[in-house]
Image (cartoon, rainbow, N blue to C red; front, side, top):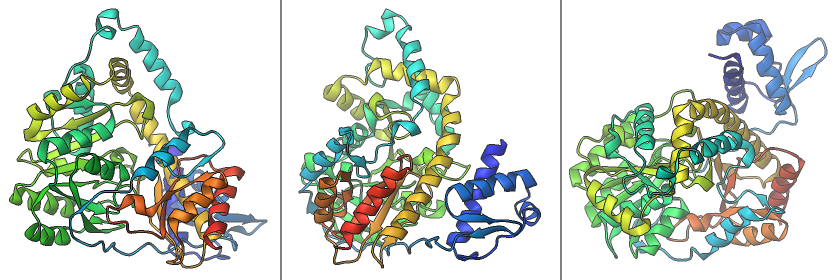
Length: 471
């Protein structure tokens, strides 16, 4: 293991001990030799970890005395409680605000805390540019043709190899390439349900999924969700006994907006429950590669032996949103989804498919993931500390173990929609809670995008939102 990777891991563990209260503001950290023994690393690794924590503002050096937890350090806020949505099917409405939210991502003068789009600094732009150049030289016979469903054979081979990391043994023939994960979700819903059908979802849930349900005329059934461990399997089972659910859609690994991750036993129970009811499970695993730990968590698809899980993912959050390259494992709906993909958009972009295949083939993806996982862990920690510093007393914040968004629950007196409008007027975009709910819940909640380089501008933006929330 590279030293850089090791000292960042030690720094994260030390930061976690500080946030858990093991070391309080003003406390002296153990000496470097003791920490080296504790973490079973070299003294130089501990020194590098301490310098990283000092740069992040968690600790400070005192001459001839060692490192201390900064007195000005704000402990991490408590996480929100388990959500309690009204468990009844409702039509999805009121998603018009989302378009305005995502459009701000293209406004250079607006600080982007709303749309979950990584800043260019967190994406391998140079490597992607080189991969695109290589793909462009592939020859006219490839570039001048559609890559009709199921998509580029080489890209599907590379994805099949990567799916082993998620615990899934699949053939390239099992994979369908799509234009991003959003198209994959829509194709999956179209294949398994129809207008007025009931779809069970997490609460809160990704607004893109709500838009898909709305556009297809289906009804959403929000299921109570734990901000740490995801959808309640017990609550889902009760809902299945009461309502005619035709599909269940969720993100088991680092959900958006909560950042929750289902434990393996809960994943197994969920897959078994839905298989028993013969209800399709649509898995959105777009953040699965962005866990803060070394080992990638398994997908729900890893426990599927009946073809009842439709797996959806893309490279939009890891490589580039603009490439629009996603993929699906359609399970027993393979033929239906290949046809739906064809009649919807003919094919995914050829050049993008060839470029991503080249990037994966030469190992660039794994190198990038090793760097960006640590970067996102730090960004989430820094953003959480800023929220703790600037936001009103009583604010609660999720504790994601992957991805790059946090869910902030403000005091009940705060109106997130009004706060969003006020923040936009000040040049800051945030995502208000109600757009993550079919029933309009979470009116005092917001989601913040942490995938932005931390600087004075970003610090002032968070301070501005916190100040507006206290008015």
